[in-house]
Length: 622
Image 1: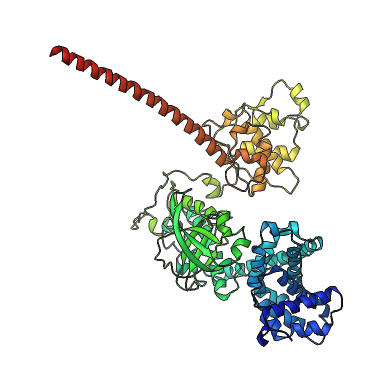
Image 2: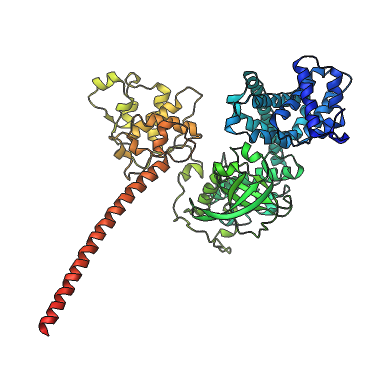
């Protein structure tokens, strides 16, 4: 038997692999030959070889896949062989490295297509026959499955079918795990004795940092939480803000706490990166700040391009998260950097960092930037409210013998009532008229009237009460849609619900069209404030804006945020408006500078003439 352990060269081992593959092609391979090979010490050793040549690796994977023919052979255990494959470096580093190192010019190479096919075949076999073991290598499988998505266009047709099957199995398993984890979390939540039940807050929520302390990341830590009120009112607005802030902050911290604990055991579902090293500090021009750059000595960075999103929260530790927790957010993730396995990070606090250490880094599953702004807004919102000592919370009350302990937060907003506090805080269910109307405003309802009604009716202007009495034959909406439409116009807060296909988006567009109508705009919008539209997903927002663009000026639409996949809507993007505004401002400034330069020239000439005149006058006197 050939093998490196017997003094044979690596080339000899590769040559033997090629010989077996040739016999497979010629259909003359004897079962004993392949069985002897996979049970040999040579096979066990080469599982840990670097495999820098994709062609040889592909042939080796083909031999492993061929073993499926002998799954029922009593002369060996295919599960034992497969277990060796799982424990080796094949899934962990070798296969990801070979996939990630492919260049564009190689993508249509048939060798790469075969490599993808055999990798998928091996993973499918694992899920079908060795499911319990596959769970131990979840993070490795995730990296491979995620990376293969980028190369679907060069897969063989039969490979695409296999990959779709693999992706479905993997997704179903992840969903099942998530459901189990959710049930477990709910069960734990019910049995946990949170400090918040029946007690006062230990501190003013406005003084809590957004970044968790090391103690809060201990799996045994029990946060101070109070339940959100559903069927009863809050005591006051301050009580409401305290509860919402703490629940939202725990929503941010909890998955990080669980993920770090799982990382310690080696079974984390979070994105985890080992061998992270600091490589320098540099000025990040977009923000004008100095940030640190780190290099991740693993192939995951290239493969999971959807991870390490900008502003994602990272936690670094050089002691496996025992006592050191360094929090930073992603700042620079340009493609050229990512390809070189580097990112730029900004620390969230001042830390004593040993830049010579090697760190382990995890990425929080909760997108920090979204939480950051909401949590800060809750902290900086000051409201007019009578504080109730029993509910509102602790040492920031000012009743009786308790004194206020001020919190030094920047940009605290002026005291004012919390928006919609009658509904959110005090549980009022009957909605009131919007503040901009007394119910007697005349609106132009042309946008919802039928063509026949427009031709027959003497006027298009009615109050909401009057339009509600009109026959539905004059309206382009059905009864439930019309009820929802008028309810939204008569209520300062409205919730429109319904199953798919009932016209919720359609009603939303009709309301936007009605409100943006130039005949209605000033009837309800006395202060010329913009109409804000928020959607759950980028796709939903794009669809809604596309509809709005059909009936309003393009110069009146600004799309905030990224993720726009529609070329038609790119012209509405915030960065384009910024550039256009910047160009306009630049032109205005240049004009001002030219006028100032002209003024300076005139003044210089005047001073010169004045100086010359004075000199002549002095000469005449002398």
